[in-house]
Image: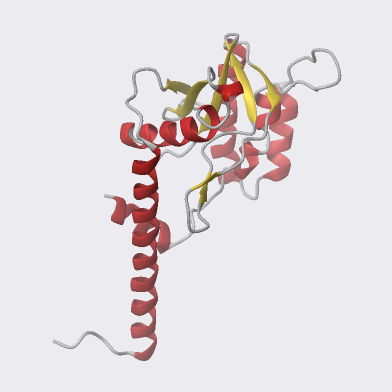
Amino acid sequence: MKRKSLEAMRAGRPPFSYKPVRSCFGDIFNIQPEMFGKTARTEWSKIQAELVRRCRSEDELAHNKRVARGLYEFASEKRIMSRKQEFFPLAMGLGRKVTFWLPMVVAIEDQPHAVFVEPRRTRGLTAEGRRFAFSMMHERIRAADEDFAGLKLAIVRFGDPEGDKRAARLFTDEGVDLYGLDETEIMVSSTYEMWRQVCEDREREARSKGTGIGPLI
């Protein structure tokens, strides 16, 4: 399954990007200024206008708007407020670094969380994928800094489209059996090695097609 996912990733670019909605996370999660008092939540109309400005096509706008709308309603319902907090990538050896979190601490119903937002509908995080992501978040955020030892971990995923939105669904690490750092390092290393093999295989196929030389049987 991992090999097939990597091959699909290598096969081509997706038809649209979620970068526009990611650029709005600060407003959606209601980041508060550090040196001033509490500010009001950004109006949805302003977030929508920003999406229109950043999206490159109507299709991209529709996908980003559904995620943004679902996340905005979720943030409003849970009375979410946030503050900026840079959590640096987790170094995994041989120059590899991974990030599964937003650069902020998010208060969800007055409880501080480190949050990862997963907007994809296909090839998104399965239960095992969430277990891996939570393990990485734990090692980089809680285990690495005692100031964040009590921080809760959360992953936000989204349901199927319902009109102009996809409803946000919150997953936490409560009850999840986390991997140890040694285990995650092995998993990351094996994935990078498999990715290298996939890229080499694709390049070999491309050269073969370019020269008109097929496999000899």
